[in-house]
Length: 468
Ligand code: FAD
Image 1 (cartoon, rainbow, N blue to C red):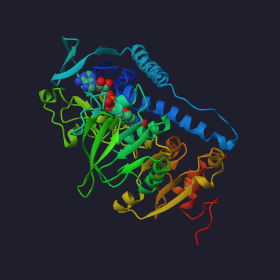
Image 2 (cartoon, rainbow, N blue to C red):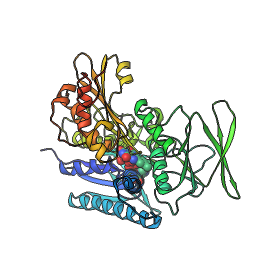
Image 3 (cartoon, rainbow, N blue to C red):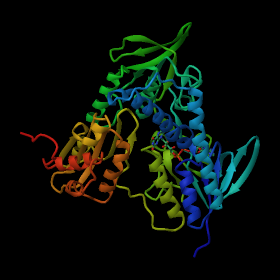
Image 4 (cartoon, rainbow, N blue to C red):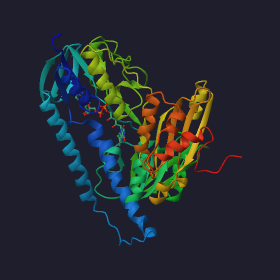
C-alpha cells in the first residue's frame, strides 16, 4: 500500500467535509481549514435552516387547512424568537455531529481563513495570528456567497440576504423579494406562511428561470392564490428610506419606473463562487467563466495537486452535487479509478407546492436532438394526494421515443422533493419508462404518480380519461 497523502481541505461545507471524511476512510492524513463553522453554507445559512423554517411554515399551512377535515384550531400565533432558537439548536446539533465525525476519523481541524501561498503551502489567519500548513494535495471547497445587486447593499437592516432572512427577529409586514429563483421563492412562500404580505420582483419573464415551464405555471398559480404579487420583466433599481418604511424603485420592461412600499427587502439574485483572497494566483490558478474553478471529471484543476469541489467548481450549485464531487475527489487522491460520471443531478425546490426535476426536460431533450414521448399524471387523480388534501400539480416523464429510455422527470406537487429520488435512481440505472411503469408501487402512496406518468408515456395510465 502506498504511503498516506497529506491532504489539506479548504472549507467544511457539504463538499469539503464529505471529502475529508472519505479521505480519512481511505487512509489519508487530512486537515480541514475552516474560517467559520463546520458545515458551511448548507448547514448554517442554507439548506438546513431554510428547510427547518419551511417545515414550520408548511405545518402552519396544514393546520390552517384542517377545518375541512373537521379539525377546528384556535388562532395560530408564531413566536419568532422560539422558532429561530429551535432552528439554531438543530443546526448546532448537526454541526457538532460533523465535529464528532472528524474527531472519530482522526481529521484535524484548523480554524481560520486559508490563503494559498504556493501549490503545497497554505497560510491560515485566525484572530490576527498567522500559521503555515504544508500538504501534498490541496482541495479547494470554499463554496459561494450571495451575489450583490447595485443599489441594494446587504446591511442586515433594510436589505437582507438569505442569511438574515433565516434568522429574523420579527416577521416583516410587507417583504419585497428581489429575484424569483429558488431561494427567493422558497423564502417568499415561507414569509407568506408566517404572515407577511409578499411581493416578488423578477428580471426575467417568469418565476424560477430555467425550470420546466409547465411546473412553474403551477407555482405561479399558487403565488396568485396566496396573493403574492409577482412582477416579471422588472428590475429593482434602488430604494429610499421613508418615515413609514422603504420605497423600492422598480423599472418595467418598457422603462417606466414605479415604486413599491415595503418594510423589508430580501435580495436573492444568485450566488457567486468564493475565491476572493484565496491566493489562487500564487498557485497559478485562474478562475474561468463566472469565477468558477475549472475542473476535469476527476475534480483536478490545471495544477496537478490542486482539486476543486462544490459550488466553487461550477454549476449546479447544490449541496448533493458538491458532496458527490467530494467523494470522487477523495477517491482520486487515494489512487482509485474514480470519476464524476453521474448521469443526472436532482434539483429540489421547497415552494408550496414543491417542485423537483431530474435529467432532461422535454424542450432540452429535443434540443439535444432526441425524439421524445411525454407522459403526465395529475395528483388530483391520486387517492393518497386527495387524502392529504394536496392535489395541486403533476408528474411528467420524458422518455426517448425510440428506445423508451427515461430521459427526465419533472414534478410539482406534494412531497415531490422526496419522490424525485426514485426518478433519479431509475435514470441512473438506465431504466425505461416501461421499467418504471411495471414496478409495483405500494398503494395508496404518492410515488404511484410516477408509475402512472410512466404508463402515460404509452397512453396507458389507468386513472385518467383516455385520450381521444
Ligand atoms: P459551502 O457550503 O459554501 O461551504 C464552504 C465553506 O468554506 C464555508 O464554511 C466557508 O466558511 C469556508 N471558506 C470559504 N473561504 C474560506 C477560506 N479562505 N478559508 C477557510 N474556509 C473558507 N442546496 C441544495 O442542494 N438544496 C437546498 O435545499 C439548498 N437550499 C439552499 C438555501 C439557501 C438559503 C442557500 C443560500 C443555499 C442553498 N443551497 C441548497 C445551496 C447549498 O447551500 C450549496 O450548494 C452548498 O452549501 C455548497 O457546498 P460547498 O461545500 O461547496 O460550499
